[in-house]
Structure formats: structure tokens, C-alpha cells
Image 1 (cartoon, rainbow, N blue to C red):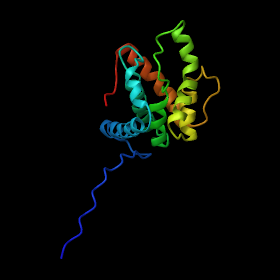
Image 2 (cartoon, rainbow, N blue to C red):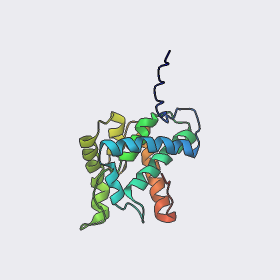
Image 3 (tube, rainbow, N blue to C red):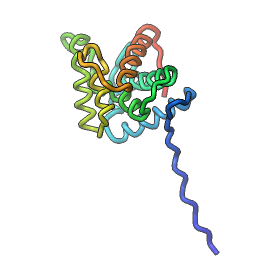
Image 4 (spheres, rainbow, N blue to C red):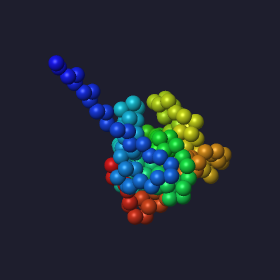
Length: 175
């Protein structure tokens, strides 16, 4: 009597849950998992072509922001939807251009890139309302209207922290 072949094991999805502190390795695995999906389904890989701060690419920066957002959530005990937090953080700078070129690159980019990033993300992905808020409001207070979800507030804080660290110390999370 032949036995049926066992179904292949699917790679377990690295889901982060509220109320649990995870290791750096586990957080990075969750970020890597979501990044691979976004690369496969859209143009996230193009963010590796553009420099964000110092010598860091936009892709390295958004991964750093996703990581810092998760750490802040866990350290502060803030309940969030980690999948939406990570996806929103990975897409918050999805503007897909070199912002260092132009007449007034810093000024124009600071105010305009959240809208550009959101339009690109909506073109390439199906986004939740939280993900939209993260992308649209991540430059608050420059975006004037504040977000209404915890995930967006965490990305705002993480983006400021990461930018400071990247410019001053050239620090990054490597995936």
C-alpha cells in the first residue's frame, strides 16, 4: 500500500504580535518578508537606485524606519497592526526619483514627496487606510494635517530618529 506524499511545508509567515518583545532577527525577518512581497508585486526594488541620506539608499532607509517603528511600538507598549506598520514604513518614501537634483531639492522634496509616494503606492499596491495614512502623513508637521492612527505616528517618530542617525552616524539596519 502506497502512502500519500506529504504536502510541502510552506515557509511560516513571520508575524509579529502585540505584547511580545521580539529579537532583532525576528523583526528583520518580518520586514524582509513584507519587502520581498512588495518587490515582487511592485517597484520597491527601484528604491535601491536612489540615495536618501549620506550614502544610504532609499531602500536601506525605509527598512531602517520599519525596524525602528517596530522597536518603538514594542518598547512603548503600543498596540499596532504590525503588517500595516511595516508595509506603510516600507512605502513611506516610495517617490521613485532622485530628490537631490533640481532647483530647490530639499525644500520642494520635503513638502511634495509624501503625495508622490502615495500616488505611486496606490498605482502599484492595494493599500489599507492605515498604510495610506502612514505614507500621506509621514512628514508631519510639514503635511499640516496630523494622522489619526498609531501606526502613522510611530513611522513619523521612527523616520525622524532614523534620519538623524543616518546623517550623523551613518547607521543602518542591513537586510
